[in-house]
Image 1 (cartoon, helix red, strand yellow):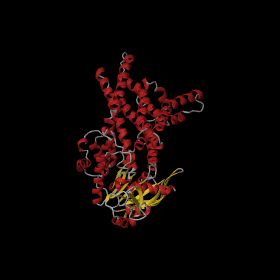
Image 2: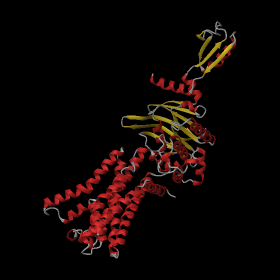
Image 3: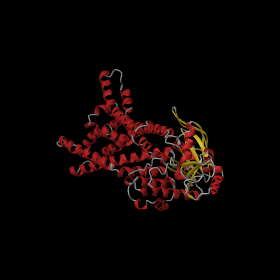
Image 4: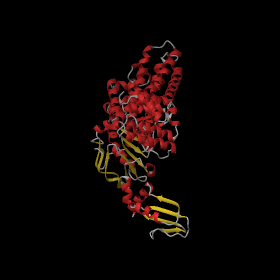
Length: 300
Length: 276
């Protein structure tokens, strides 16, 4: 990993008595894909707005490409950022192609690539219809196209897949995959963490403005200590369990909860069972389980 | 193309496409025509140019209408885009906030100018065509009426932008805009009239009166139109006024430009500091 493109150090943002973000430190390094998880109101959108320089932090510093995010120098650098807002707001009277042309001009990009972008997000057939008549999914696709203008080095996606149908989600993650391959830095906020499996290098979990977890997925899984659930069904209902640790669920079916570190041993112990095995099921805690656990732990 | 002109172009296209310009032009043209045709009845015998009379009656009407149109355009300009979320996206682009507010303002001003020019201009042409063989000199005050209307609109546009920048809710912006419009267009003059009647010229000297008139963009507009030309002030019954309280046209224009620059400057300043 090379140097950080975005750095937040000790950043707080208060709206009156409400603390939207409290003393947060975060680095986005070049080529990283970071997932930002948290409930509604956890401060995800505020964090993205801070990076964009739309709001000023109450305390702390936000640096973007080495400049203060609120400075004119950072404003000029915004041509290298793509932003997909949480509520996609586009001008309804313009057509899709006009919308993209408007934003391309603002980013000083040649308009010649626009048709290709519309093709890529899958709305080229609707390019000359007014955005007002678009479905939510189409608007989201168009908004994605504007975020991709000018091959940005940082992409900020604020809940990009909320309300999208599975096909649109798939297109979206394909594009994320391409962007990662091209070395772009991506920050993706979401509350559907399970979708992100395999896409994010790092997961940051926020709650009530605080960062409560930050790390790679495997590290988080180890950290939370959530057990892996292994269950075996045996052909002979009377057969004994491989060891007393296995808990009988029903005749002939046993279940074992073990930690990540003991997983291999536990699976090996299944070999000691004399009776033929009818079925074997291993449940690894998913991202959503980890996420729920992290949030619960904070409550306790 | 630079960011300001991109935003101007977008605003003008929006205005043309949502029929705003068309509706406003038609409204203004219809009113101008109605006043021109009706106004020609009493002037028929004395052979007064209908365009000249139209200027007098139109300026009295524009004083209400043009600021209202400007306020309707402006109150939503900033707060509406912030509310819908388009502003956050726009500001995530490499444009400064100064460029955004400047582009939007010029775009809206262009819409207003197109509507006023097209509306009044077409009505003027129609009157000329119907009554034929009129004084070409009557076009100068008519052109000045259009120009002054655009300036008046610009000052209310600027005030509307200031309101739109300061408030958080669209409804609040609409309410305040309406209040400001009512104050400058109706209440201010009524109050001034009351003061003048009660004072009987003891304290309020022509100098103070001039200052008070300059302190309201709609009064500046009235003076620009009704005292700017000899003929017009005669028909408007302002001949006496203009002798006593003569404000030179450049001064009136300067005052009106200040009424545009100051509120707009404040709006731009506040917008730069606004938290989204």
